[in-house]
Amino acid sequence: MSDNHPATLSIKALLAECQFERTRRGGPGGQHRNKVESAIVVTHVPTNVSGQASERRSQHANRDIAIDRLRVNLALAVRREISADAIVPSERWQTRCRAGRIGVSVRHEDFAALLAEALDVLSANKFSLPTAAELLTVSSSQLIKVLKLEPAAMQQLNENREKLGLRRLK
Image (tube, rainbow, N blue to C red; front, side, top):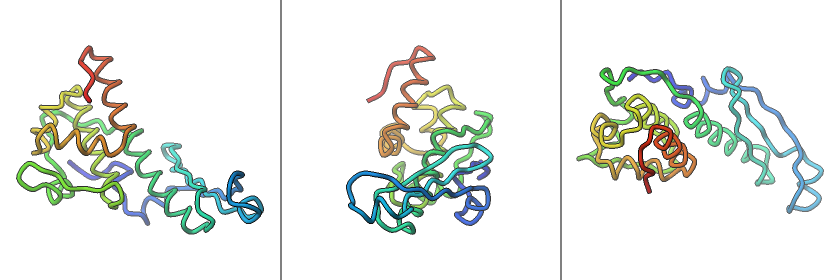
């Protein structure tokens, strides 16, 4: 599969398509938090998907967190139309797989791209977990493991499966 999903873009390419907003957020953190615009909202303009962060005192730290959240939100919100019979795992996916197992952490820069690929393949195969797992050269339990790293992905999978009359997965 080609890497044309926005979650797969390099940070530089992604940021070229984004708009940043600095803002103040209330809550714990005292006077510094309430007086300084350290909260960041980053919006991917072509899709209007955004990520935000305000939990750190540093604007730079919040920017990095907001970009990570944007990439995950893009993985959840944007589906590529791919033909089920033309699915070949991306090079990124293949390098993370060994003997039917996939290794990835939510903190790794590849996580959002891998999540997007898994959801795209599931969507192209009517959310059939065994079929998608086989096409991605992992076991069904390994595919579920990736989706469970982001609870919203599991929720999305189950909502789509229910719409098709399929049982929920745990």
